[in-house]
Image (cartoon, rainbow, N blue to C red; front, top):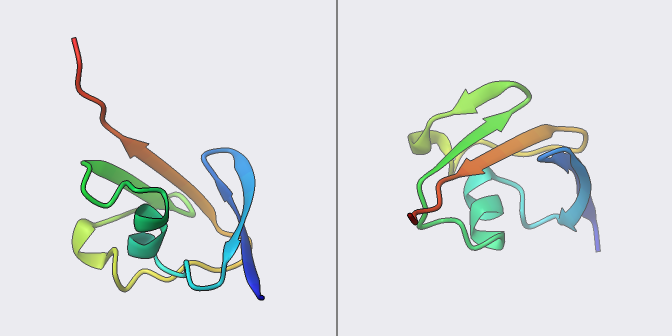
Length: 70
């Protein structure tokens, strides 16, 4: 099985090749229904682009999601 290697929130990760877009990455980590900001290679990805923004080996990805509470 081919895998993608990239940096996610400062850690090296290896994920199945099917996790090849921002949308699939959020789904993989069960974050698809949360409010999140995603940055790929220091560029913020707009929510409308999550499905089409492809991930590649060596990318640097940051995900910030908001948690409620008080």
